[in-house]
Image (cartoon, rainbow, N blue to C red; front, side, top):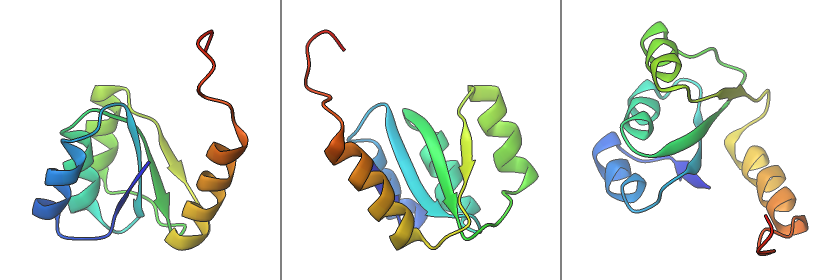
Length: 95
């Protein structure tokens, strides 16, 4: 999980370091969303109950990347996702 709360150029540096990641960012940050979609991203979690731009929707559809809309602020979404990740046992080799 990565959080997109900086410039798109700075975000690309971080996004390129991780594969198959979830990116949490504001629904109004099309620049961050598109930057995430240009790297190995498994899903975008868009906060603020804001619908993404048509450009982002089309690109996510082309790449088959799901978009999740959250009706909460970014920090609250991070807390929920982090809690779920902490409760899950992802280290099991069978998974």
